[in-house]
Image: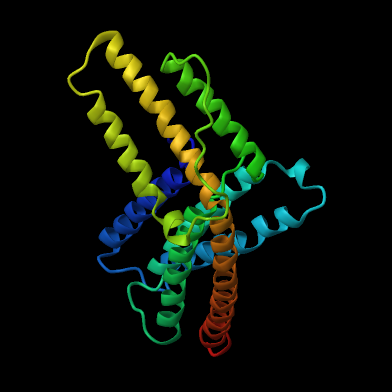
Length: 266
């Protein structure tokens, strides 16, 4: 589980350390670090650099014709998510909790961008992918379903495998894609309930059967919702990209204004 979400784990750890450092500075100076002060200014600059990295590096890696030499897409996506969480966090605490004027607009856009990114990650994971980040085709999903059928048949001590795929590719909906977390969680809870009161080999066999059955249902849902997930991801891109461009346009105006008033008029 940690392997699948390690970028979130490291992002939370980084934000905790940044918060502790911020509180230590506040305790030492007995005041909230201002945006124009050394600490506030440093947070703003580093946070903005990380946001620029978020906006550019992953996109450049995807478009690179020699991308394989720079590492796997999955690792770049993890770094993209890490900087996309830590950078905005630093930018949000940079103004010293004063969200007025252009800084307030920029903070609002930053929050919207983060929520959009979190939603995008959730939708992205709805499209099944290999370890290198490449999408798994419908044929590969159906083959996985057949393998799980055979495993279920073996665990049930059946003599032959019966085709039990009942899903129709492309018949899923966006609601089913967005609610898959709760469906998977419900399956896990059912498995735990099934094993209650059992012990020894009987419990192990039942739990093993339930685990394979849960994987089979997950693959079925992926087959059914594959087209809807791709469509939803495409729709998300049409919103997320303009939002990002707007955010950076406002950010550059904010930086230009800050340089003008803090340096040129000094």
